[in-house]
Amino acid sequence: MEQGTGKTKPTEIPPQVHEADRNDGNPQSLQDDKEAHEPQKPDPSGAFTSKMNAYIWKLSISAGLGGLLFGYDTGVISGALLYIRDDFESVDKNTSLQEAIVSTALAGAIVGSAAGGKMSDRFGRKPVIMFSDMIFVVGAAVMASAVNPELIIVGRVLVGLGIGIASVTAPLYIAEASPAKFRGALVTMNNLMITGGQFISYVINLAFTKVPGTWRWMLGVAALPAIVQIVAMLFLPESPRWLYRCGRKDESVEVLRHIYTNQQQLDQEVKELQRSVEDEIVRGESGLKFRHALRTRELRMALVAGVGLLVFQQFSGINTVMYYSPSIVELAGYASHQTALLLSLIVSGMNALGTVAGIIFIDRLGRRRLAMSSLLGVIIALVILTVVFHLTNNDSPSVAIGQSIFQRAGFTCPLILSSPSNLDCVSCLKASSTCGFCAAPGNEMQPGICLLSNKTTGDYCGDLSRSWFTRGCPSHFGWLAILGMALYICAFSPGMGPVPWAVNSEVYPLQYRGVSGGIGATACWMSNLVVTQSFLSLTKAIGTSYTFLLLSGIAILALFFVFFFVPETKGLSFEEMERMWAARAAQRWGRSWVKLQLSDSNSKDGLDHL
Picture 1: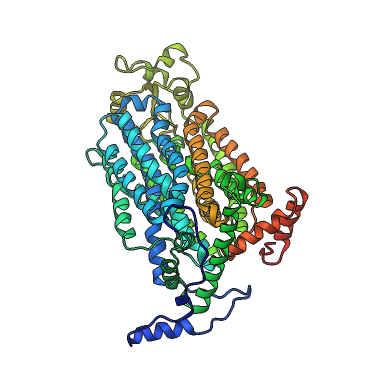
Picture 2: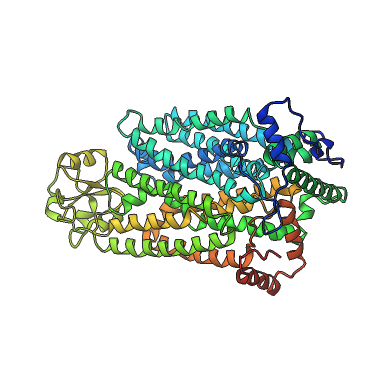
């Protein structure tokens, strides 16, 4: 089939699959040839065991650099926003503009992910990944050179386009080039890159806190991993399954030969791939396009599981913690930007370590069990954060009215003149966005001064050796908020971090994998946009405590969703997964579906797929 035509002619399995590679007498080649022909014992499930090799690692890590871009952008904007607010007063005074700077990248990602699936199906996974990198580099350059908030937003949109395209294509590329036994772990490598990128971004944020043009350096450095990935992808092959589907079978088999070094495995993989493509041809000749395929129960069930997981991943609050972690730290009563960034760095490091745990356990415990245990921990952490922020609201220092009134001319907060009694830090900050709290020196829980909030009064407060609070107030319980955030990350990162992306990359039929993955990623980015665009506004409207309470309620719904709608896919080949959906589609959506899930849960090893 010609690239992009969408038609495939069935052919026999290429003859070179059935014979060993010729070697030139090189001892290493002879050894490789010997190993390839050694009979391999099946594992308990009946499938041949696979071995990881350097080729698979190189492919997965290089393609996973797209996740590093996503993670770096997520983390870096949370720190850069603190300094963008210092440079642009219009941003500092406008919560909606702050949310726009963060969330416009998500708007770009929605468009990118919607287009990325179709692009990768038509042009191939590899060139589309490289194209997303090029867009990202341009966006990073625009942000670093921006002279006003509007240009920052333009750069954020471009960066988002690149991230959105990569978020669909990179997991597909890795999944389609991975042995079934290790597919979950290798797709989770993309998530490790995301969390690693977030950790690196906080290190960069801290490194540039004292450098002129702080936020410009933070945002501009983002171009480097994109350039590295462009170079790395030049030396990698196209997805073998995409090649086979396009009729380029010899090229596909050559790539698969590097992945499946055992001849029996290679034969089995090519046979299954041929059968899958032939089934696709039958459906294509029947005129079964995607819009018609949506009428089939098995595709709808797969979309419910894949898309639903990604939506609940976002609405359980992860990116409110990652995008706004420095702001949350400040809300918990830590005034220093550097302290906020340092504590956020620790949280981000825990996120990366948790993802490593996900790599270890996703193919051992299974996707479903890991997601459910993760959500239980997330619910507990969000309840803790709800309680802690409720306590901090009732534990802030009072306002010293006399000191607040008799400050320099023009420094007095209007609230002091209109309501001069029974004021504390919380009422000072909440009553008017134009006021800040200058804490007492030494012991911040002693009465402080409520002043008009601007850069001049902030510097004046610093000159008095006092801490300047504009987002949160000092509290005895602030450290508990950090503990709650850490617990949230420990629970989320091994399970609900990698599982939705792993499931979304593997549950769809080959013919619709790109477009279905695009639907999932688009839904994910739209959910992300809603959450991040509304988080600061929600904390202002209903308070931080009730915002986290709302997120905990959504996490409870997510737990029930996983139990009832997400089957276990651990260890299944793509072709076995299609047969699983066909078997499940033969059951009715209602009681039979619940019965199947209960059967999965009660089976000895959780692998009673059918």
